[in-house]
Length: 393
Image (cartoon, rainbow, N blue to C red; front, top):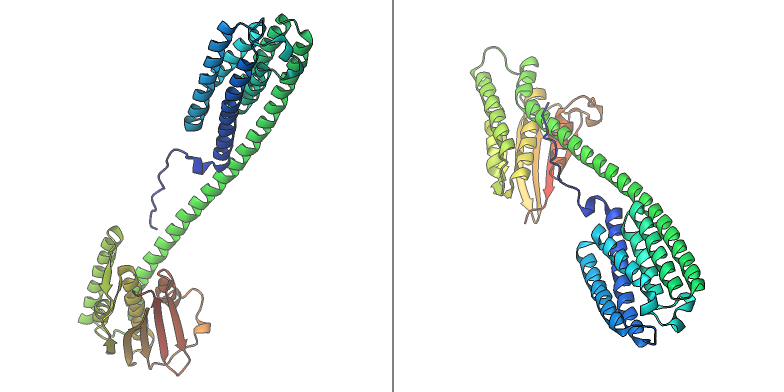
């Protein structure tokens, strides 16, 4: 039984978790753009109203810092994703700005939850929920809420403090719940995809193992088992030098096949030469051969030559004394190899399922290279096996 090496493993990539990758992309891009947009618009709005008790000496550097932070945050998040320190910095700056409401926001624009710091606070709590785990994002939302309520109350507007604090709490709760639900669904989707990928890999490995076993069985059937079958059927009477040579040739072929498995041939090869080598393995069978020069890929040449050899070996086993022909021709992009004999023939439909020769050594082998094999025979009418492959340049 051939041993198939286990596939190598590598660290997961975004392609291994497509739902998680899409979630991360969306919930990194949107917060980055939201932070950048609100930062730029907030800067303009903040500087537009500077009536007392707003302190311009404090407002201008605060706006400059927040604007620079918004630009850096957006660029960094879009390139590398949002990180914990970035979320912490965003929350810290927003909370500090909220506590400074008495000196940064004019009293006439504070009510109605429309001041630039109100918008900044809402942006921060929403971004925190979408970019950080709930165990950190919810406390961050509460901290911003507390900072805003404290600042608005200190500015002399407890109604605004209560109103927007309530809004911030609702925004924190709803965004946290929605994000958690989406993360859960995304995790399940990626887990299902990972299971599917695992099953596909296992199926590929199992298929490779089955194909290796079938290839090994074909090689054995076409060499040693074929020779033993001829001996058992009496096709080789008594001691025979030809039999000894055939057994030695079978062993050489198996050794050659083993070497070919470790270093498979590549590039085009002459199919007519491969067919002549196949004929040389059956010196006891007189064959009228017509072999037109033809070059095909090495794998295809091997399949055609080995299938033809198996067909000729069947003539020796089941139709001793029959006359056989081997014909190779190609036209346009199709190669045709035909093996015929005038033996007793048989009914292809009556061949038992356990018989390996036609099913695997000929039909199955041709299927591995995208070719086909047609078997035409009937009792008393001889046999014709047509091997066909399309794809010649």
